[in-house]
Image 1 (cartoon, one colour):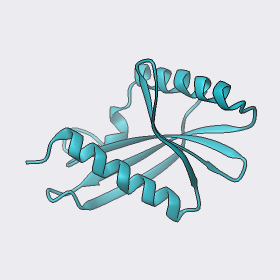
Image 2 (cartoon, one colour; image 1 turned 180 degrees about the vertical axis):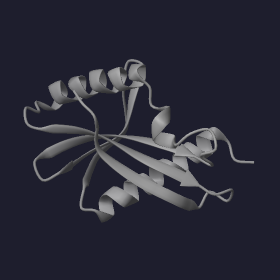
Image 3 (cartoon, one colour; image 1 turned 90 degrees about the vertical axis):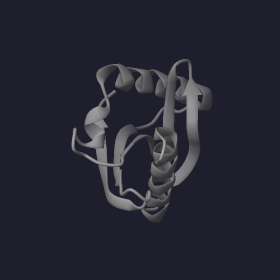
Image 4 (cartoon, helix red, strand yellow; image 1 turned 30 degrees about the vertical axis):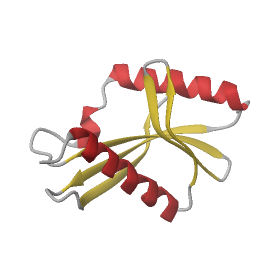
Length: 120
């Protein structure tokens, strides 16, 4: 049986590959500030993008992207603000969600990339 941590790690690996294949440049992984963690920080052209990866091994009780709540969004936005301050960023940003469903052997079953999933 796969643990929640193993499922999450596999999902983040798949998400990173997905972003790289689409031409995104990865800047940070699992960037932390206080109680928040931003799974992936990347850029595409002049756009800075904060990505939350949600992975499940089934969607019987709801899709992975539906598990992001308002508190988590607020923490991600707070951490994003801190990251922007640290790097002196003052141009456009975006918050995305990558939703992943894995099969029992941790192989990709479905991936969806939601751009502008929530707003700052």
